[in-house]
Length: 132
Image 1 (tube, rainbow, N blue to C red):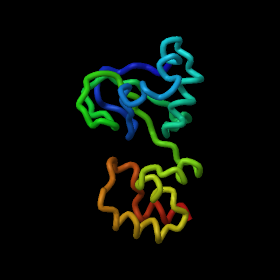
Image 2 (image 1 turned 90 degrees about the vertical axis):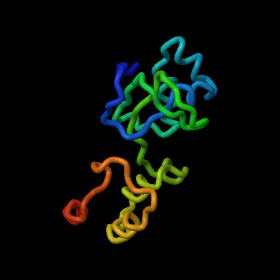
Image 3 (image 1 turned 120 degrees about the horizontal axis):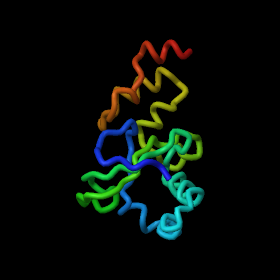
């Protein structure tokens, strides 16, 4: 499995608490026997970009489902950006970042009321132009 960290700093911008994942069919059994292939398949189905890996952090965090504050393990990761995930209703930030029309991408970023979490997930106009 991935390495365990006991502090809240991470290079990843998304997380899922073990509390959120433990009720997914097959997760508890796969975790108990350390079936990495099955755990990875479950995490992938929940939006984890396995190519970028994931970490297990132990810290205080808010669960995604119940919004309860918990101290314990969570998976930290980057969200998938593939077309199938985009069509499944992934985060608006990732949908905007993956928009192929640069002028629309810039306009959508300006209209976003939610804002963006990390600066490195938002490209500047100069970066976008250089990718043309």
